[in-house]
Length: 221
Image (cartoon, helix red, strand yellow):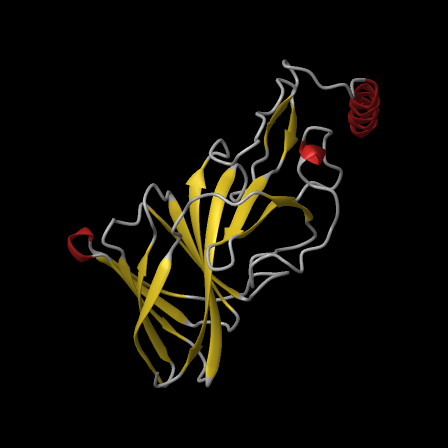
């Protein structure tokens, strides 16, 4: 049985090497996102593909991530310049920042599907309150790799926004980037939809229009 299984595996690998063409019935996955800094109105296309398809290369051409919003980049990315869109973007108002506790009111902007908060410091606990929609409080362990260590992601944020409290090691200064995400890329001028032999990758930040806003916060401010 082990020998049979080994031969079967080898046969499947060989078949896979022969059937390497993609078409509408066997589409290839590709990752593409649009990100714009709301303050500077600097925009880029972003792809996490190791070897982007020709369609994806319409938008990305190199690996320079230096112009992306602070804390946005995660891992090795392809990037390319993109036109700006009309969007206000997310906002954060500091309600309190004393000791190891930061309290914010976060609003997402019209049509936003989800909001991601990234901080340049690790956090130990997070609480979110959305009025009549209730609240949730969870301990936080671990850290994101290849980007800022802390990330909080919300879906279905109400129009009035949400109040967020995070517990962090005491620091005089932290940086925060909000990422408001909207489904699809069709609002970006010049965007051409994927051909039939390509489908969206499974990364959670793909096929999204992301508008960001960054803050530098100081304690007791």
